[in-house]
Length: 219
Image 1 (cartoon, rainbow, N blue to C red):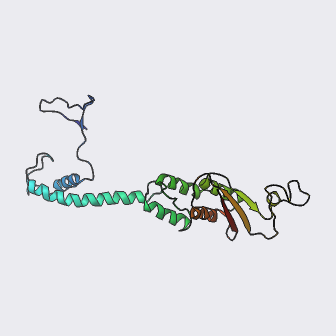
Image 2: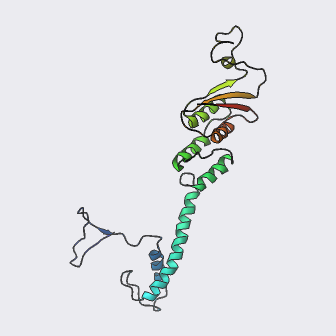
Image 3: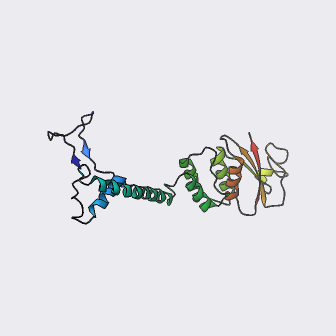
């Protein structure tokens, strides 16, 4: 980059005494595209190009700048579209579309007032999260509510107790069980505000298919 100089050929300095450099025309702007178009015009048709600041054909320059403005808007749109093709850079409504593509319309749902960075972090963690186990369901709920839930499996003696078992029926935190499988109970303790819709979506994504989850929200 060239050093900016005044009429006395002395280097120009900023208020903090740092030397100013000429960075040229910003790429992708209307002026940049107008300059590119000017340079590819046949020689001899118009006055020779002597730089953007010393233009001998102002009408031509104005016409090319108009074309450059259209190309600059296309360039900006292409840059925006390119960002939306990667999970690490997509944002806004396109991030929600990516969530629907990866997890389905009822999979990972954006929370109320949730920022893109936090929503993207939840999506990435959900891509590699374990599924179909008790620990997986517990972790999915903990990420949303801020506290691990209590899971009650009807056939699990540690959850429901058993006759002649220490801490069995009648003990605190015990529940009556059942020999019918395919379902479990969740008691969710909210340390963080969580929408029921988002919580159900997380449980549905983490549990095994065909298993029923009964959910109770604890204040």
